[in-house]
Amino acid sequence: MDIKNPVESPVTFNLHRAEYLVAFAVTIGMILWHFTDMRWFVAIGLFLYIDLLGYIPGAIAYRRSPDGRIHKAYYVLYNTMHSLLSVALVGVLWMWLIGPEWALLALPFHVFGDRGVFGNFLKPFGLPFEPVPTPLVDRVTAMLKRRAATDGPVPLPYEEQAAATGAAAAVGAHR
Image (cartoon, rainbow, N blue to C red; front, side, top):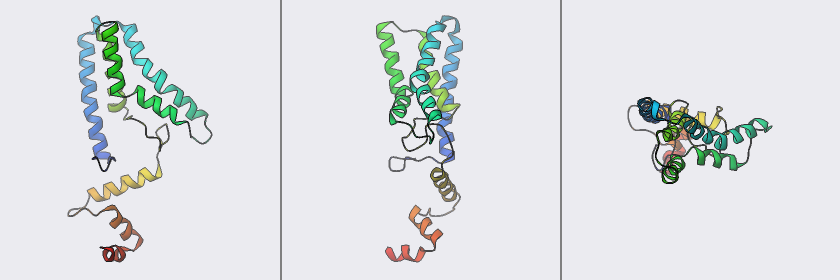
């Protein structure tokens, strides 16, 4: 994945998840280290608000929708509440208004767990709100796997498409 190709193969997706699993493990270690110092009702509240505002409304709307289409506002809510930027802002505001405390570890614990353990990243508008197999994504993933299996120059996607449709000569003539 890069700036021009914001798509992940299964391998890079799992490596991305692994980075969050390490951060999740560090957060768990800090929670265990400061277990008796935490205000647990505060920690539980900080953990839950993310899904109460960001996931539950969209999940309900998705399940009620006959065709799985829901308003983009649900995606925005999810992405805002599950953003490391917004949880950092909540943490900074909490420390400024109330003071620093170990219960704030619930914020990164939630986001790192969602991404590392469950593989839930921010939701793009073009995909269903809940994870379901999507044929176009399946085709792109299959293409990335084929390209990863080649030894030698990696063909460009339009070359693969042309070869698959028997128009390879047209691609060569186009150059």
